[in-house]
Structures are given as structure tokens and as C-alpha cells.
Length: 169
Image 1: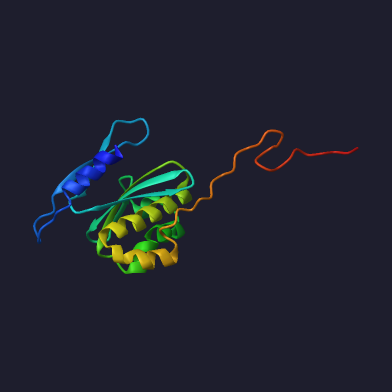
Image 2: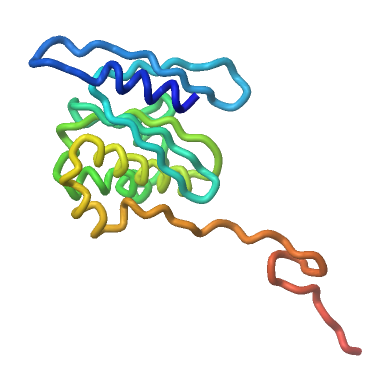
């Protein structure tokens, strides 16, 4: 399904002049429901971000600076200001927070993992918009996928490393 999205975005990515922005329908499947079609303007850049068990699909396009996650506004979807700032860091670092709009679909994990995945996806999408942003994004570590995930439980242990309580007498 991701290959189809890339083909649609490559085919429709040519925007000439100040003509009205045409909408491209991109299929997005959230859990076991029927596909939801996101209306994303032609000329948008796509990036995939990952963090822990969360995966974010991000579309960045010229706009007024609005950010939408799973059909909701950013401030409504993420409860704390820390998470909101975390998502917007790549745009703020480059000074593009008012000139680009972002649409994000996030699956899996918790809210902090989803915020990290969204940040990673925005950074990757901004690279497609302009490859010159690479140095600034790389310095801040936005392009590096955070490899930390929960360690699996081992047999003979209570959790990954914690042992059972031992009583000598």
C-alpha cells in the first residue's frame, strides 16, 4: 500500500504557479476499519516516522502552519504542551512552522511514542521538500530513528531483568 501512495504522490507532485491546489486522495487504514481517504494537496512531501512501537505517516505541504493528527488538531490530540512542542521541533528549528501545514496518521504505541514518530516523519518529509535542510536536521538528531524499544521478558525472570524475590530463611 505504501508503494501505491508513493506513486500517487510522485505523479501528482507537479504544481505550477499559483494555481488552485488540487487534492489527492491517499488511502489510510486505521486498525481493522475500512480505509479512510485523507485529502492531501498535490505537491505534498511524504515521510514515515517510527518510535518504539508507533508508526507515523506524515504529509507536509505549503500552508498556514496547521497540524492535524488522525483528523484532530494537534493540541486536541496530544494533551500536554511538551508533546506538542516535541512534534513541532523540526519545523521550529528551520523557521517553517508558519509556512507549512502537516497531516499525520499515527498507529500503535502511546502518546509519547506517537509524538516521537510524528517528529521523525516531519523531519523526513522536510528533506524531500528541500535536501538543503539535511545539515540542520541532522545536527539536532531529528533524522535518526530512536532504536530504544522495550526489552523482551526472559524465562525465569519476573520481567526482562528483574528476578523473583529470594528469601534465605
